Length: 320
Length: 242
Image (cartoon, rainbow over all chains, first blue to last red):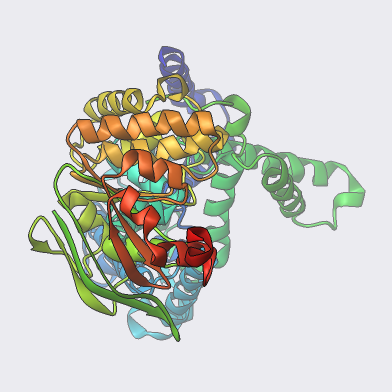
């Protein structure tokens, strides 16, 4: 345990000095890596720990992004103040989806499909209702002041992503070691047995999806403030859902560090293949090469490493 | 302590349980036996809230619990185990048992301590750090028992905890079950292994084709012609008597 703690501190120290030592584009890549780990962690709580695999987690991301952006652009709110509201909105949508689908008794792949459907419905709605400005998307006026949630120097957005990632790790850690986490795992492993042992399966699943939705929505606001533009296909596109699911599965679903490890691995692959494609002419037309590698990796992981890359580190579970 | 009155449950056209009644009194070990497909597990599931009965009434400690959700019934002090064992495969035995212990405490240390104490009761101390998936059949049966015990029940419903065990293992688990009863927990058990029922239960109910056909001491039951026929077929009682 203390070795793990030391390792964590060392990693944190490295993450803190990293942006001071590398060129700007690498700071940006590091930021994306941490941010994706954060989104992955939100997926991991519901999909990894509780086993409620979602294909449409982007719905929370999009709701968060649109809530804060609409409050800011249309109603003139300060984005920092809009942030918690965005999280509330994401949590509310998570609660609603959970109540609707779990009341109807949807499990496994049916639940996954219904989340995908919800994300699509939200995308289409965002495309057609007036207050999102439809397919035009929403532009946030550039005004690079920290009190405005915009930063001149990208190092600050990197540190913000780092903070989000650390917070998400602490949340996962706190959940995993306590009663809530034990109950989620029990539900994932066997719902009937969980029920027999006094667990209110429905309530716990609603709770975790609400929390996961709020977390993911926080990521949506962050994204909007970083790029200052969102449209329906960015905010509710299926690729973001896949990304969250992929980093978590690759790293290790239902483990604290899974999403982070997966995000690091996929970022490295992504950058490496991009580099490779620019050097090897034959690969120039295979675009994006990273997707091919992702696909192969996912197959290998599902077949050989069901516990993800974390499974390489940890053979046996440590007892509580 | 437990009162089941005229309970019926059908699946489609099949009457799995047909107006079955039974009583369990505080401190007893009561057996529920019957041939394959008699409806024992269905009756259990209906008592524990897994199936809503079509009609009839279940009362636990004087309180009507008919149709209550399983987690509420468990919280009220009655817990069931499964005939087909359902271990949480990817976590350790300790964590498995802790899930049960968490019913009454949110404190991790307390739950862990509780899990260890329960593991000792059922003789699983050695296996605490094994994965649920790695247990033998006997180990899984014990884990079912341990998890249920960890919820702190006053009435334990055991569904064939001895099926699939060898004679030595049966003797061991019979000892464990007696110990549990001596600790003050009332037990209703479904069993297939006749010898186990005779050595454990003070009273036995016999279910056949969904109906309760007999009730009494194990010795009286074994002599009941209706019971013999249920197990061995029509006319068997006459043959045996001859």
